[in-house]
Image (cartoon, rainbow, N blue to C red; front, top):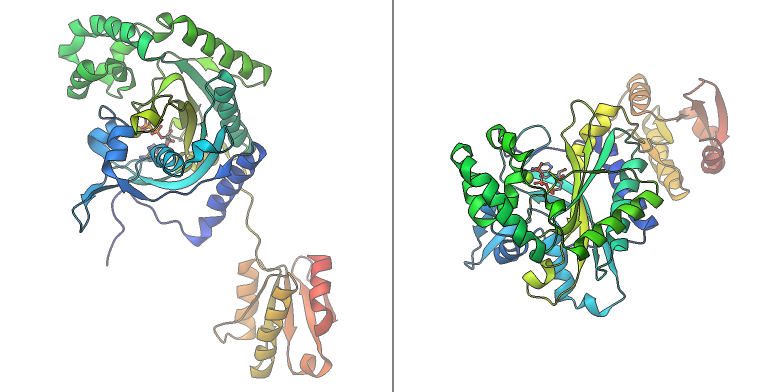
Length: 418
Ligand code: ATP
Ligand code: MG
């Protein structure tokens, strides 16, 4: 027996409809906001992530799947979607096209983490990117898209938390204040936080260790240190959310795990029991594109974790729309009718009706059992008499009534009644 790698999951056909539903709602919501899909490689040169995601992030520090390929190049399975999109935007000269650039992605991402509920080594994200607009409208648009997506999924027990982490200028003063606050407590904090203290003290606020968290509530708050421009920007984002009827809560503890954020940061958090906290996170990252070698292009976006959304939907009992089952099962009672059933299935499919037929030479009884289990709405029975007549006995599985229908009229008959 061989097993799947730790921290990965199989998506089985029986649950495929759930994933298809999530992806369909994601695509439809993105289309409503005129965001187009972008697909980039699953792996990139490692340097993209070390520069784009940032050296002090958990991702680059300890979570990346990095290896040398046969040509001795260091490559990394993407741990998130933004860096690849930003690289593609620059490399393909999209900055010369219509602005703002608006794109969404549906991807799997890879992080070497300790697997647990809602935390996998291969997981899936729906994300959106908006480049080229520096004003608060862009932030509000991206948050509106995230909000609409979650509402369209039928999720209700979800709250939006927003914060501003300022710009490089105002954050410098804030870092000083944080260092003054944490310095006398540093001995009691985790090893990671000791490194964060030196490199990026704000990241301490995102620590998940209980020992560190007890100090973070009373730490200085970025909102008290914002420069006038950052303050105005944040006030305008909040005003736009309010006029759009999107409820939010300002939470100074939201700092996000990646190095590239500036100004607005936000998270959508579920309160449904049994679901894993943050289902979607995002913010503004105005320095990302220049960090990876481009010119200054302001950027804002988000990423949602699909596995966590599935958990939240299950916890809330939110309905998944099921994919269609076959409209008609064609049942052949003997050799000749089996062959006719096979040919008719092809005709029905060309007419736009989904059809299934026996592929395992089963008995009549076993075929009925299969059709019932598969959820076929109609079963068209063909035997010697039916072949002679050129008509099938069509059984409506909903009410057990049945009717003779000519082979040539079967497609139209089913289209009218399904
Ligand atoms: P966390 O703080 O939970 O580790 P993060 O800040 O690392 O999350 P992001 O990089 O912002 O997460 O990714 C966006 C979303 O992707 C998260 O809100 C979450 O829903 C999902 N996500 C992140 N890492 C994982 C993972 N290992 N397994 C499943 N989903 C994940
Ligand atoms: Mg993480």
